Image (cartoon, rainbow, N blue to C red):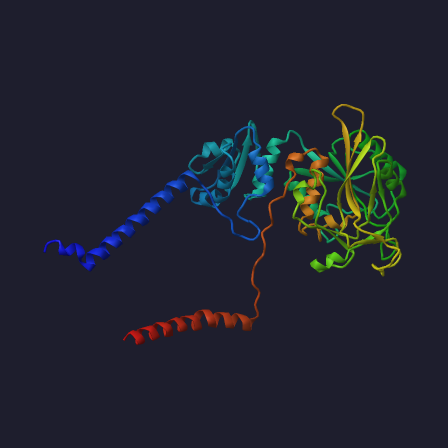
Length: 456
C-alpha cells in the first residue's frame, strides 16, 4: 500500500521533470567550463565584419615575440574594446591585452603620454606605436609599424597629367593614398621634370596614368633608379585620341619597359564579360590569376580594369618578367583608338585572353640588390571611383607590398562594413507597420481564441 505512490502518475511526472532539470544543469555546467577554456565564436555576417582579416591573422600568428596591446579608457567603456581585442588574443598566446583606467592609474597613463580616453598603444619589444583608431585597421597598422624598422614612402610622379594623391574626385588617387597609410606607408608627390632624380627616401616610385609624354631625363631617372635596385609601379592607359584629354604615346617610357621585357601595346581591351557587373565592354574583368606573391592570395576575388591595354612579355638580358593576370577568353583588343565608337566583333581585333598585368625583376649584379617593377595596362582601376570594386584595393596594396619587399603583408585586407539599410516608401512603411503592429498580433489573438473555443 505504501509503495503505491511510486507508481502514481504524479510521481512519474515529478521524476521526469527532475531528470530533465538535472540534464539541463549538467549541459549548462559543461558548456560554461568549455566556454571558459575555449573562446570560440562564429561569424554569420555576409562580409565577416566580426572576424579579423587574413592579413591581420597572418601578421599576428607570425609574431616572434610578445605583443602587448594596452587600452586606456574609463572602466565602464572597457567592454566596447574587449570584443575586438579578444579576437587578437584568440589568434595566438603571444598577444596580451591590458586595460588601464587613466582616472584610477594616472601615473601609468602619464608615463604612456595618454591625452585622451580611448587611446590604444601597441608594443612589440621596446617599440611602441599608438593606434590611429580603435578598429582592426588601426590596431593592425600600429602592429605593422612596430614590426618595421624604417619609414617606407611611396612616391607618385607628377608633372605629366598623372593621377594625384591629393585629388578627391572620381579620377583622383586620394583613396589609394589612404589605403597605403593603413598599411603604414607614407605617400608623397615628386616631380622629375624639376629634378630628374628619384629621391633617396622613395621606397616605391609610382607612375600613375600619365597623359603627357615623359621627357628623356625623366625616363633616364626611372631607369637609373630601377636598375640600381629601386622599385617602380607603372599604371599605363591606352593612348586614346578622342575626348577632351588625349593620352600621349609616351614612346620613351614604353621603350624603357620594352628593354626590360614588357611591350605595352597600343590597343584597347573590350570584354563582354563585364556585363555581369553592369559595366560596358571597356571594363576588362579578371577572375583568374597566375602564381606570384602579388596575386596568390587573390583567388576568388574579381578585379576590374576600365580602359585597359594589353602587354606582351619576354625575358631579356638582366630582366625576368612574369604574367600576373589576363583578360577573359571572350575579350578582344582593338587598335582603333581615334573614336569612341569601337566594334568588339571587328575581325581585325586581337583575340583574348590578353595579358593586363605583369611583374618583373632586374638583376643589378650587386649582392642583396634587385630592381623590381610591376606594369598594369590601366590606371583608372586604382582611382577613387573604382578602387573599392571587389579585389582592386587588395591588388593595389599587394603590388606595393611586393615592390617594397614587404611580402609578409600581402593578403586580403579588412573588409569594409556593408550598408544594409532597407529603403522604403511611405506606403511601404505604412504596410510594414500595420502588419507588425496590428495584423500579426490580431492573428495570434484570433488563433488563441479559436483554440480556446474548440477546447471549451
